[in-house]
Length: 138
Image 1 (tube, rainbow, N blue to C red):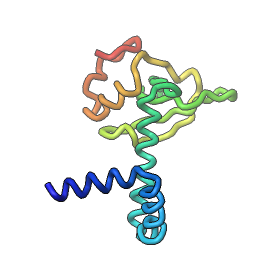
Image 2 (cartoon, one colour):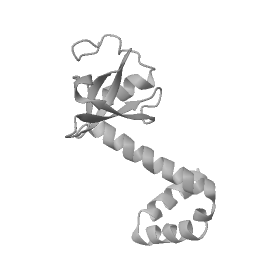
Image 3 (cartoon, rainbow, N blue to C red):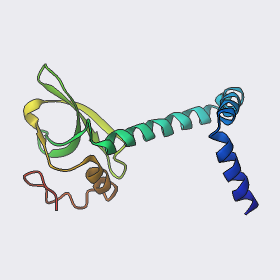
């Protein structure tokens, strides 16, 4: 219980202006010198930002992308004037890692699912995506 109380107090202190400045100094003086910490911090920041972008659904459309011999699920990131669409192709079980592809507009079909739906199904290795037809999964 004492350890939990100390952790709670440290968290409350870190949210104050003085706590923020103290942590920034500590991070710059000590933690930034540890290579593993800087990589870990960047990775966590990237994952948090990616997760927020994907779950917001504002700028992210879920699409089916027709490739040569298969169709994959992706997130439309940008539709360019030159006829190409930038698509993020999520991996499984983590939809936050994957590939980015440039594909012709005519290979991209929007579907009626949210990024959160896709992320949930990717965590389950695609379970529930087998019925995608006409843009709906059952």
